[in-house]
Length: 478
Image (cartoon, rainbow, N blue to C red; front, top):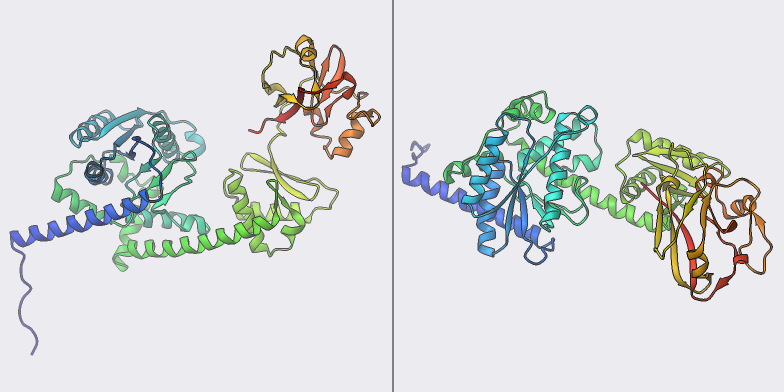
């Protein structure tokens, strides 16, 4: 016989018990996530941690939970608020956030920003860039090494969907991680933690309602002209209709992708160890890998060089130009604001070759013991190393005059006492210095006598002494 009993309706007391249980479970999960983050990030001295606080529901819940935890653990906590000035309500939001932070006994700091490069990035991305630049600046000012954001499970699903729709690879489909120690928009040494990443938006709403957390509502969140809003308002509800709780499934898939990406990173590190030499890649060793492993290694190597991930088309072009060129060729490829060059069997990143014109007139210098002299017009600097075993007499350089000049074509240099003087052209060729580099390598004269050629060395005919001053040229890399 079927059970004919009706479900028991919750009394007010029972409903309260459910809310308490929900609150306790969310708080426990949050604290576990934050402790996992803190176990991997060094918090120095009394600097504490910071959170990005917009005043919206998500960051307001983060403020409530983080302030409780930090108070129990005696960890200083800062709430950083970025004022974009895009909404007529921005000043009211700032005042609200300051009031709530003070009530929670959290140090509040606000910073106003102006958006730039909107035409290049669009207002959505320009605002994001400005926000992270301001947050980084505030973290620097307060010696913060960990910044918390209120990203949650629904944000994760939206991020993965957006990346999928733009045809991203594994790094994009990996979505967001609990801890990001090398975020592209933050400086080195500043980690980004997301302790709410396992919680849904509905859970945060229920917690905010039960605890009476006050928050603001940004009217721009409903503007579907912005891609993320379009996914949140138009696409996600349709998916939810046919696939209830899809955000949790997408988040699970992103964790699998993160595992796959970590394995690819480990493989790239192994290949890099075999192919890298002094920051460049040996092309003969690179050619011995499969196309997929070459692409994987190139992505990994370029990220290590501080460059953004190349597109599939750029990778194909990079492979064909650098691996397919003849051994005598020196192909160049512009990528992510830098120049990739094939030279003597190696692939290297250099950005010395710009559209500027090297100086054509002499420049008189006066050396007064500086360790280096910056010469931006030559896109480099002169480095003076005192106490060298074989260098110029200090008095010779101090008395001068020193004149920095471009090449004229007939100069000769004597690099060693047991070797004859040679033309600079021959010395450049022997050193493997390419013709397009040479105009950016100045000559230094002392009392009208050639003393030093950038990229080659010092002329011994001026006399080298023990405990002297040796000269070295370093190009400036942008």
